[in-house]
Image 1 (cartoon, helix red, strand yellow):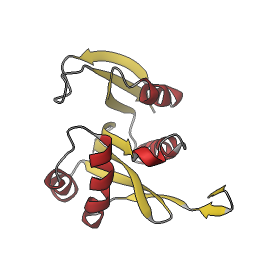
Image 2: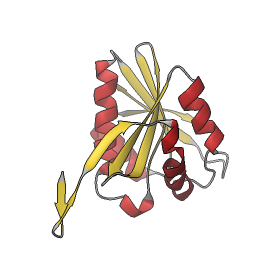
Image 3: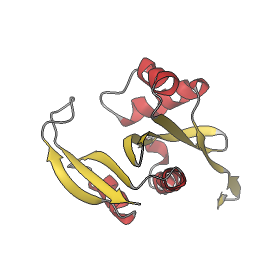
Image 4: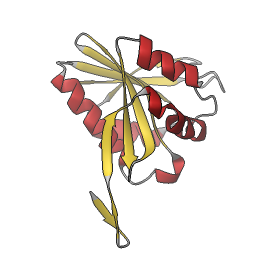
Length: 155
């Protein structure tokens, strides 16, 4: 729980359900130039046995999410977004901390992700959790052909 200007903010991290797709789309559209369609989130939640999506809420309102594929002893973060209005308040760190805690509880030994080579803010956050840079995936992002930096951490 955090307090700000006399108001109490209640922060909660929980698993996403299909009922959460609309508020997640609010975050998705504000965060990415090529947002995933609703159907992709629905398919991930309902039909992908490896996928788990987590939400971070402030006062019961979704402000961010993180998708993870748990495959045996490895986890791959598919996406992590905090709505731009809420960035800079360490919500991304809170969310990632909870996701990594869940991964450890599931017996995950290594976690990976891709991040834009120009997104140094996100890279800095990932490094603070022990993620290390690996290879570059050329022309990974469809909106502008930007390269992705693959990062990984041993848990």
